Length: 284
Image: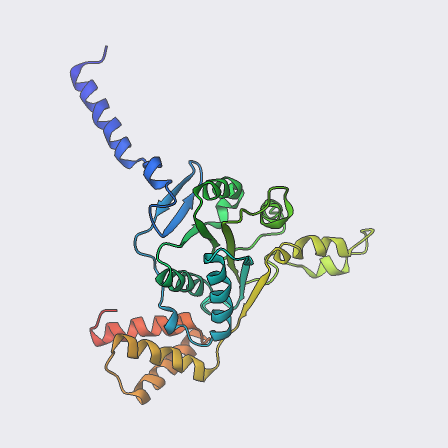
């Protein structure tokens, strides 16, 4: 039998572990919040009170993509058919920002109608378990994976294909899957895939790799913005946060910032605004 001192230490350790452990009953309740992060092993949904996102009206240069995704999401929230969506293209062009902004806009019109669940790339293999939990909730959800891509030797894409459209059970009717990626076909393609002559049907190797993106009915391409659009993004932020700077000075400094970064994009514009606000002594 442990001594009183040892027993007290063991009790304190047990209580500390209990405080650190996620409370499965509350954290796995899909109705407890509007946004969650999915964690695997153990499986649970972490509610997110404050989502890191940008107002949809501040996203310039992607108006067509915005309208298409907003329409698809709005129909889904109303219980109508909708497609899985793949947002692909250049880095920093607002892909993930648009998904989160569209979720906020739809819920603003229909409070609580739509949940947003982020699943990390490394947890894709647990996707069927996540879908079962969401399916049983009865609520409608956007299941969101940011920066989704697969390497040559990664077989996780096969399970994702089956879950999205190809399996017997398929995707639950109350869940739609949105993913962002720098790659249009989600998998790296080497020239050897197109030139190999040892296979009986060399094209089949390529078809296997590009077929995953075919599971997304809505493809939205994002590209680096022109200078005028870049200035419009910067000026939109300045007006929104009421930063005191003349237009000529703003454009000159914003252009210098873009040159030093070697690109113009929404992310570069936001990083410039953070620097500008800091130099002006203002918070965002």
